Length: 141
Image 1 (cartoon, rainbow, N blue to C red):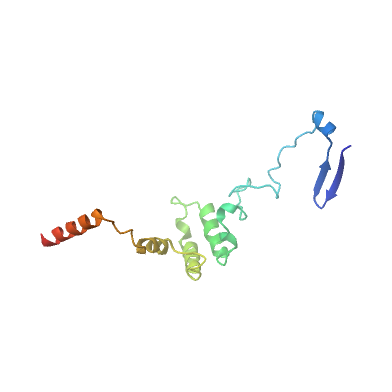
Image 2 (image 1 turned 30 degrees about the horizontal axis):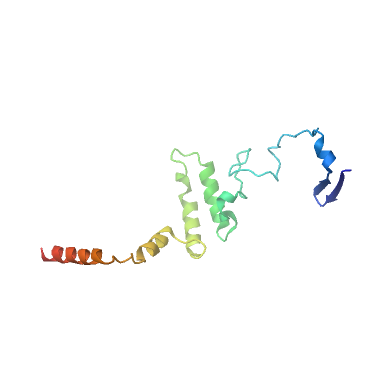
């Protein structure tokens, strides 16, 4: 015999093997696009920005969250021919804020420089002597 138990917002239903043998008569309800608990993408059905979207990587809630929201909102709602061209001030403010927190917001250039500074694997064996001979030949000409 099946029974239910309520735990907070969840309803737990226990069923028997016999309950599973009969076809279900459950009616599926269409998803409510305005359900605040339903996961949405970056843009909500009403056109607003979903600041809780995981695609933003927490940018909206970090130490520069307000600057990020201002810049992103400006860009999203921009009506300029070159979208976002009216948002330079907001993006500059966001960039200035991010520069105050280099550990949280590393610059792409810094990441590329760190990769370039790593020494390449030195050539081994005959390849090493061929490389040094080629360098000497180039230097003498």
